[in-house]
Image 1: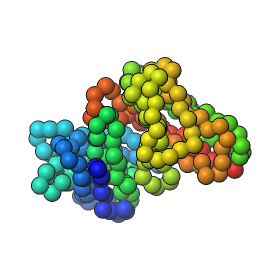
Image 2 (image 1 turned 90 degrees about the vertical axis):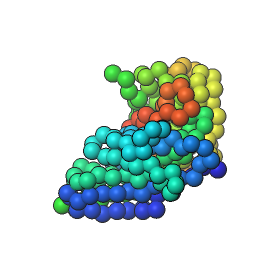
Image 3 (image 1 turned 180 degrees about the horizontal axis):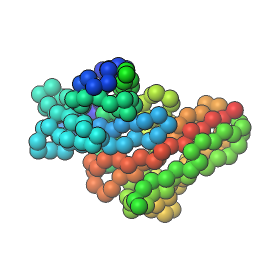
Length: 112
Length: 113
């Protein structure tokens, strides 16, 4: 069965510092991978997605993610974090029939 | 503007009341979903629909029911609310195809006293 693991429950970074959020997946076929962000009291917003092709994908708000098949990973990165990036981040793998399996999420706190 | 809407955003209600959470999307998406999410926690799929008159239960057992009479509308109903139903409910939709991203509404935060 498919699964998504986000090893870090909570990460704190200083504003302006770089960020990497980890995501590992388990899926038998070629994965379709997503990163979503959820601000407090809001729904989820898609940051970026990987279906095929270039393993480094660019998203909105200056985020990027790199797909590494050998490591079954899809880590999210940002070179310089802004205070407005504080939120909950979810990694997801698309499974058949239009559903997705979500990770447990990583809470990002940004220190001034 | 294409979007997905949920009403109400917040609902506080007494035990035993019947409630319906509304979800509508203007993107023409065939697939729609309901998730339950406790604060700071993961999402649990409770219902999904592939199209009109098609609904199925999700991975997490729920006492709620859903209907899909129109493509754009996917309401969720609780016949008798209980404190254990207190949670955030997120509605989402996605386009035709097996692996498309989901578009989420802002959520309904339900509190049952």
